[in-house]
Length: 408
Image 1 (tube, helix red, strand yellow):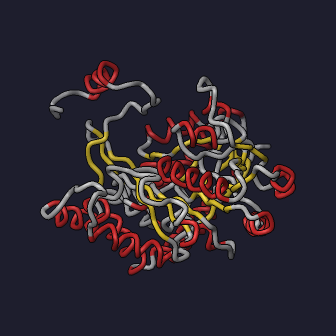
Image 2 (cartoon, rainbow, N blue to C red):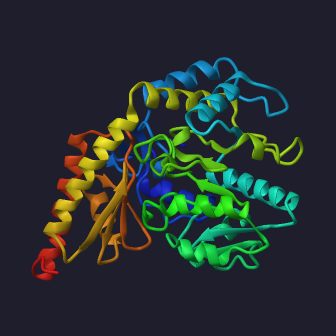
């Protein structure tokens, strides 16, 4: 597209040529570097959305750019009819960093979750004809028909009936509800270690351990959707590592490629054999080009101790937001998070604050209607966090002034 076109012209072009499935913010992004992005009109923004937890190393990180440049000169795509070295190297890195399983590659989190669902169905069929998967209310697993059916949010499922049968939704962070839902048809439990789209909901410390015990007791698969929580987002390489458990299946995407489209399902070696040749596939899954980027991401995270940095910056960010919570109790209900997956629960709808942040050069996100969600690049520093806190302070302070004070 010709860069001489205005923002308004590009937006009008979208209306003409692009299906309107998104409520897009009216800016046209053209450049990114680190935690900053610039729009077509030259405005600079501090990006605390990071492509919805995708740009794990920020924008245009040298290690990712260099890996892409090298690989693009050699081999971009072959399909999975053949072996390629980058795919093997990436699978080994993921396996070694997690629980030693085997990896199926796709292009997105929804596709990774589709693979997990199909694996669970084959496992259930081989163990007595079971097929039901227990998932949680307020969960989000994707927008394909299977992952939509697994998702526990009616607003996302609306108008797409009939949904795929075989999913039972129970209250998140409620072990008793899960145990009551298990029956002779249950084959698996599928859960996000921390719910992202549902409002950055963090379970009790013993919740995932309890799910593991229930799965062991009833011969079920424990499948963890780490699409948003994985790849150092929560201060360890995978969120399950905070809870001293090992899943049977784990799904990844988002931060794995730091901007490149990739999804992965990791299954224990025994469970991986439930998907033999011909049972599942992905033409574009893990091309050499995308794998080269993901390898660079994992290597950088491990070599530079990004997990330690995320833990430190996450604690600092939460402390800054908690100060705002104490300062403005009439607007802010509380702050919760792990690593750099942080939510600020509000007592009002958050859309207005998101828009004001945009006008002040700060990109944030609101989920569940009243939770400001912060998913910055994992490389964010204290100065950038301070800048974000100052902008939020000014905006929320203005809201409380309009209300006549900051009293709860």
